[in-house]
Image 1 (cartoon, rainbow, N blue to C red):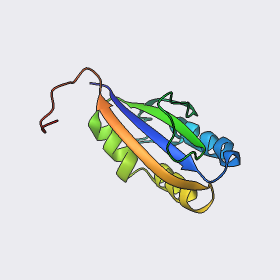
Image 2 (image 1 turned 60 degrees about the vertical axis):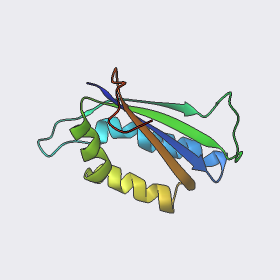
Image 3 (image 1 turned 180 degrees about the vertical axis):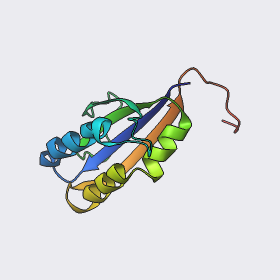
Length: 115
C-alpha cells in the first residue's frame, strides 16, 4: 500500500520557506537507495493554510511525500544521506524551529493500538 508522510515545518521567518522548499522538493531527485534507484514517488508542498487556526502563529510550510512502502519511508527517515544532510541544514541554516510529522497508509483504517 502507498505510504504518505506529511511534514509541517514551523519557521523563524517567512524568508526561510523558499530555500527549504527548494531543498525538500529536490529530494525526489537526490534521494536514492543503495542500488541507485529513486524511491520517493512524489513530493508536493505549500504554505500552511489550515481553516482550524494556528495556535503559535509561526510561518509554516507543509509537504506530502509519497512512498511505495514502509521500508522506503524508513530508509528515507533514518538512512538516506541526502535527507540526513537536509535535516542538518534545517537545524543550522534554514530557520526551522519545529518539525511535526504524520504518516498514514492509504486505505488502511484498522489500527493495532486503541484509538
